[in-house]
Image (cartoon, rainbow, N blue to C red; front, side, top):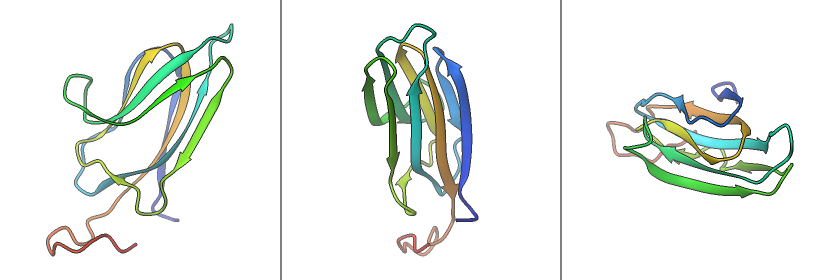
Length: 114
């Protein structure tokens, strides 16, 4: 998929705006690993929005020590025109977010047809 992009969010405990709001933005998937120096539980929430105060949760994940999680939503993904935001609720994680932007059907009311 030539139009698939990714953003790597370095290991840390702070929240991060992964992808800015963009018409046609779709979350395709993610890979997240608990990354504390001394393995510990972690909890994250991937949200649609540009900041922690104006978001809608897409998925929440609770990690056991040293656990990793991967999800792939397919080439159509999940619509996130408000942006993609990683809310690190507790613990330390490293994340890779896969996304794409398409305006197919934007004005015609058609479903995306990648």
